[in-house]
Length: 274
Image 1 (cartoon, one colour):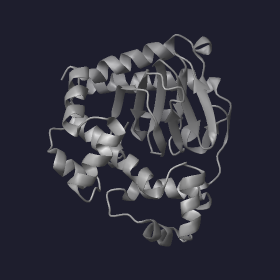
Image 2 (cartoon, helix red, strand yellow):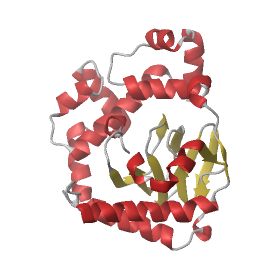
Image 3 (cartoon, rainbow, N blue to C red):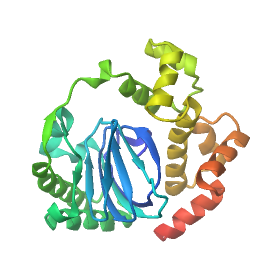
Image 4 (cartoon, rainbow, N blue to C red):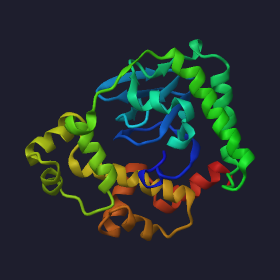
């Protein structure tokens, strides 16, 4: 997953990840997910879309989405995240419209879509030199192929101005921007201009978790990205993510991933061949 702090960078990232629960979140990047094995459910807003192996989901920038594994089976999914600079001529469509359903079933896909995704995965797995213009041109080209072949297969409609009207959108957007700070429910409610009770209801009724659990999920997404991609000290990463103590971080991390941060880093690097 591409964390919020990297969104202004000109990046295209592909990861093969175990299927897992991801809390509702949003970002300015295009996200494409291809289920490789197992089962997965893509959520967009309050709607859920079960996926079968080979199905592809196209998540437009700025839309709240989430992922679930309801049957407990282990699986793998390819996640592509492409910054706005990769959207090209499709940028206006992707930012002003939204799909009725974000899924393209395997049987309805032209061969160009899985081929382009596999090429993007192969190219990014080797690491990308920012100065390598030919490789970057290939990345742009394959992202454009995915979009050119996907968008005509989606039924689109104009999106409303959610930023100022939808309290769920405002909640997700606020935490994406402030998760590294010392957040409190009352302070966030004050900043959003709503009551703490109404804000608490959003977390329990829409996200099916409490405020602290949701904030920690976002922080852990940041932490795991940094563990995979950097050699920075684990303690430094934890405090930068917004955790107030090492003990709290270790407890939350162990409960979520059933291993230590160091073991997570070692396993992620072994899987990637680093």
